[in-house]
Length: 475
Image (cartoon, rainbow, N blue to C red; front, side, top):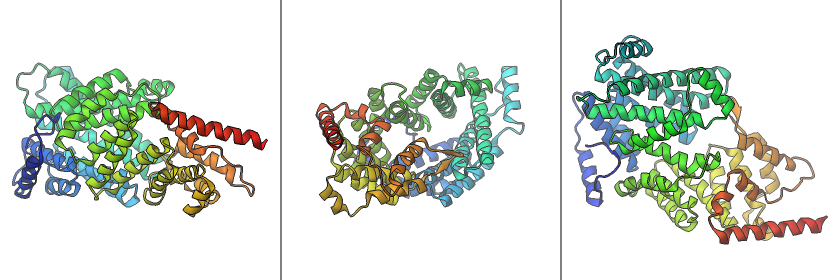
């Protein structure tokens, strides 16, 4: 089974049926060399993108303690599951599995430390010191280390875990830098084969993601990190990720997803520049062709529709995404969040409330934000509609402070904002918030999105002017 690559293979109903039939008849392999491991992990990736999450895990499980790529794939899915559910039990399972994956990768690494082995390699200008398997072991180890660090941050809020996570990230980054040097030294090597390109894809993902993420940090923090060996070059990061996304390695889809997150969320929320929707669409299109019912693919397609101002089309796509699978309910929660905003932009407050209510009851990501958002939307309803919901707005606002959380020992900025606003309802005589749902829209940079639609922008202006007139009359 070839890897996903840039998704140029033809697709259709018949191909999916054949793929499923092929999976049902796969015997458990009796041996697992690097080439076989990559092929089987490619099959698991196809299963995952076709919403067959449990089947992907079952395919990877038998070799998860004996093959570095099976270990990486198996633990990565469990880490994603932990990030989705935010349940302590799932987080602990993810950390435990990732620890086992690190041990598996360690067995394939060169016996000396990575810094020693790769530094010697660079000095002697020879690739003989690292075998092909050892090169892949370095990349897999670095990926596992980075994911374990991320889970360490959310597992506990104490400073010790924060420091541990930071050290893991630094080690991972050093490995990627050394592997990048190896890659540059071997570019002209005539013996490059499929497994080499898989290694190349891993390096481009790591170097690209690190440079892009670090470049988003405030300047003074970035200067401090550069002093201890990190670098945050945005253009280099984007270039590496684009090259990785256009390749045919297992990591091509991860490079694509990283770029999609940047274009559809980060650039908008952090204000780093205009979202490149044209690139986002071109990156996603091959996967839409190959995995037309893939929930993760459908989610990004709907998100792009939102950013283009096509809210009605986005709503239908989010519904398709919800209907596509029932195993990972947390993907539904992502859709609920976006649907809540779709209806907020259109000032359909009852529908927006419906999705905010679902989030506050079902999702664990940020209870403080969900409850505040629900209360804020309820504030926008006419008195009769509010009574029909049976909700007590003052009571909801008073819950917010007790729901805030800390990640990596720090409070979440949007939660802190919501808590400060909600405190106006803490006294015996609450001080009413003015258009709180629109204020939250501003916080999440929603006006930049709704601005794509002149009709909806005009409607929002009418709402604001109406509230302004009411305030003037009160005084």
